[in-house]
Length: 159
Image 1 (spheres, one colour):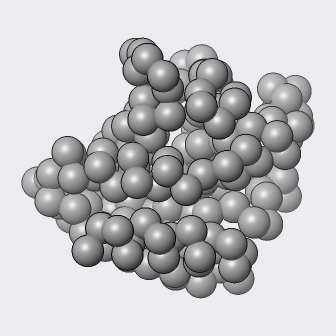
Image 2 (cartoon, rainbow, N blue to C red):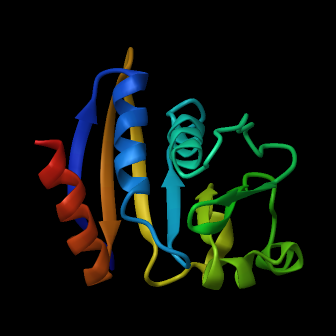
Image 3 (cartoon, helix red, strand yellow):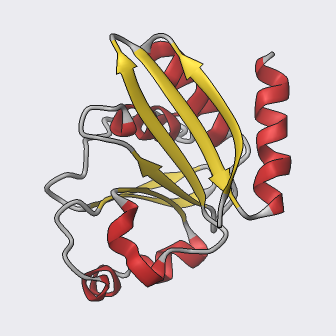
């Protein structure tokens, strides 16, 4: 079972985006981020800021709600941004090639519960809860010790 490594609150979209940029600085190829939260919680905002921070020339980053997968070239190599809300079985995840991408690319996955048994055991789950207005509570959970070390760097620099 994953344990909460860190939690914090942000009080504006800009502050949430800045945190996403900080997370982007500790990523490496093969890392998987599972973005969990209700509709409108800020998952796409978080993903957009992170993706743009890793691009040499930031480009438009639309939500993959209808395309399911958007891919980007970044400083770290390929990055897949996925919205699995409309996925009904893990078989569809395999058809998309997401299972292979999770091994080699950075993957940001919204609605990860639809991965079911394909969820990487070393993924970082980021829970974003809308507390009203622009306030968000973000919890970072994993069982992987590497994430604990990476997040320590992020939050140490944020203080």
